[in-house]
Length: 298
Picture 1 (cartoon, rainbow, N blue to C red):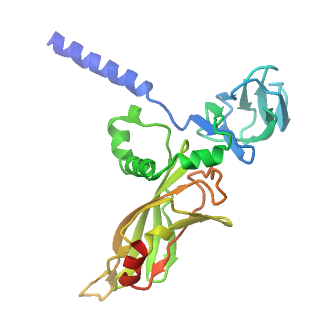
Picture 2 (cartoon, rainbow, N blue to C red):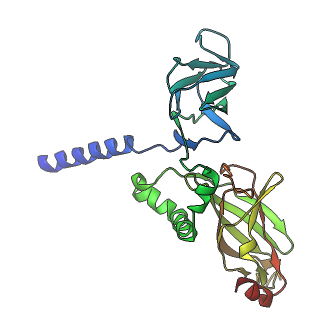
Picture 3 (cartoon, rainbow, N blue to C red):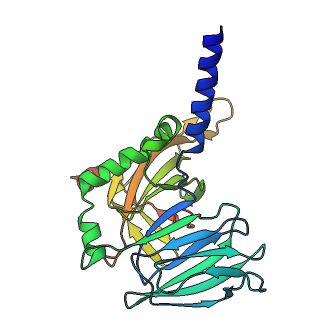
């Protein structure tokens, strides 16, 4: 009996330690350096956020930021000249601040804002390719994209059983719907794989008509503002089965189809650096008939 009790206590202890040492990907962030991007860093009053660059910084220029913790500015900055890192912390509940970091003859723009789930550590890394945007995209071929699709599909299974095996993946479940004639598109989930600059979209497509609808998977795209990002790899059937007519009410019960597609980089060949919580609008091109669909997919 004593041995059994000891084993139970040991299991509880190991489980507690395991739970405490799981990586928190919301708090630990890594971003590629891109002087055309504005980085939003989430901070809080209770915890410092440490930001690291590849080497010593040249200069810092800020607004709404102070190096005196007793001052009335929104954000406190702790930095020693010549170091490659600094820390920030909010001094007010709803604090915002702006900081330009001059490093390696480039200026990187950071904005700070308070959030219930702040970043604890942010590491900026430099892409080694002389033309990092092109080098990054050329390294993301069909085989790599298929692997990312598989990882997105298995994300929740792995998260529940082997969380330590997951790399840093940002996710969102916007459940945002777009209405088309006779069908609807819902963004069920978005996954971001930052090293590959790739987003995976999980879609639910609802056919609200009693007829089969065909669409072109290879033209799937998302719109963010005025920019359109076309798929780098679709995983979709291209066919929406007809909805079922209820014999009693004669109303159509929509059919539901699942589809995935990837978006990699930006239309100009650079990185997209798109966050998963953007207000995406999915673009679906309808095919006139199954014949056109077959011809387009050959």
